[in-house]
Length: 212
Image (cartoon, rainbow, N blue to C red; front, side, top):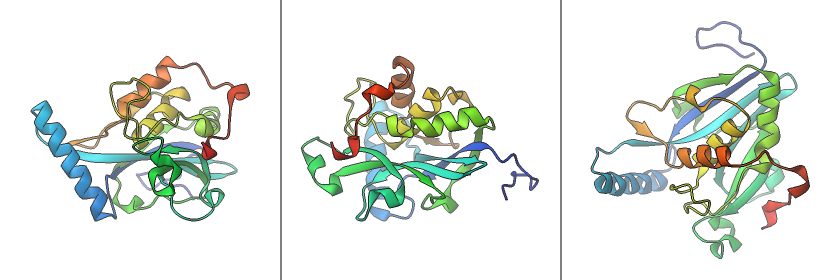
């Protein structure tokens, strides 16, 4: 049963956003994130901030779904609800699994390290049409090279870009999203900018990007 933060019953339809500390559950990613933020903070002459990775949970009458982007692990992609993917670092490196990421739209799926989420969940909507629209958009999310700015958004593309692109493209208000205190989400603004500059996805243009 879905319950609200106050402990009461909650509508069966909901789209919730979660903020997960970058590298939660993995020391290597966390250390790399801290090194990256230290360098950016030095260049921008500002204090260091905590870095966050975003994910969505969509609750509908016919089931719940998790939407998240992550590195591609071994195993069948369909078992994790993977619907799109792309290379990490360079397109040439993307020939190898360890240099690829995937976008998951996973029915009854899990978000690893959800227990470590901060300032979450954040309710974005309880409208069923909007929730289904967001769900339908998951396979259409842009999949440029992760960590690069191929879409000329003045910021690298990453997992946060994917989540913000989905929110804006589905017609939800990104202003409903608030950052955890003392934190930031690299790539978030790139997704917002690209979504605002694009037309709605065209079904005739869809291709199987999991193999490209």
